Length: 233
Image (cartoon, rainbow, N blue to C red; front, side, top):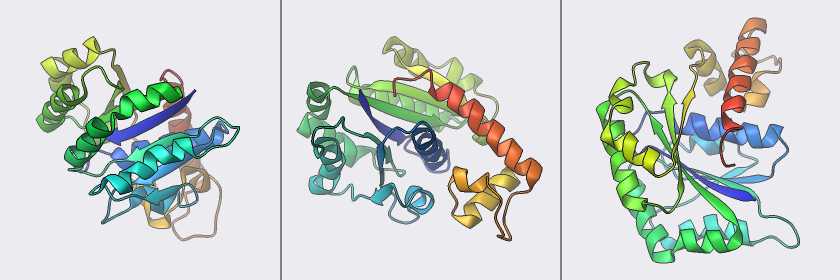
């Protein structure tokens, strides 16, 4: 079974692209074919780090978004690839219109494709309110994965005791945590425009990670993969 993964959270700065990149590296390391789409016009972060796998997509038109579904249909004699869509901030409205008017969930179900909506959250109230809006928008349509990004806060008690999370759990949501990677290491990886695979291998770059930095990234990826293995991918 293949999966269509929308990596969202609606607000900027919660770590959506980091989650998309971890999922991409997971698929690569597990030798699971995937195609990526980057909806961020200004930064195209996902495309920068996984340019061989991801391409930009315009969310302002149905024709642009149709490319996401078409990637699952354009296969001959093989299982469709997994798809990762890195949703930029404030893209929920056009994406929701496209999904509802195209009856995307029904089409994907007929194809045997699992649809996962990832809600990447920081420790603030906005993430709680946006989770509530996400559940109201899609109801029983997709699977939900709520990601507590520990790189964007440590106290998620506001989320934990919220009605929004209870609504998500009632829909069968998976709640997971993404550990914090040392900020200096992440900055070095970002400056190199490097995939996580490239980052953990020695290079001559001025921003190359040191021996123990590479080991910490490996451990962070290992723990992240253990979390991903519990999800419907």
